[in-house]
Image 1 (cartoon, rainbow, N blue to C red):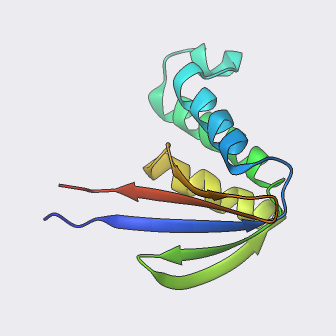
Image 2: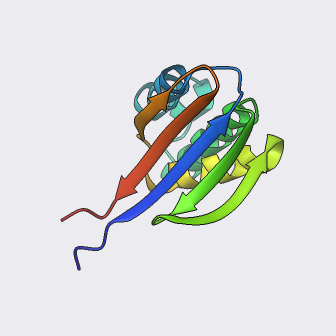
Length: 114
């Protein structure tokens, strides 16, 4: 027990700043923002729709290198990056912005703290 999982995503380029991207993720998490989220109350369907929306946003975040618990894991861009962000979002929907410059943006997703 007490395991902390940490995924660090470092973006190069991208359409939005890290803060703007985080705001969009929070809006999807808290407000839904799309009619299908409020459709039939099926929680699994709602979660998959939200994951899909984050994946669509993630496609536009340029190229990213990902570290899992401090170890370099992979790099991704486009659809692959979007899919990865959608998956991470299902586990930990609200990241922390570490760096938010014009050329480098870093988000950290942490969960399992005790």
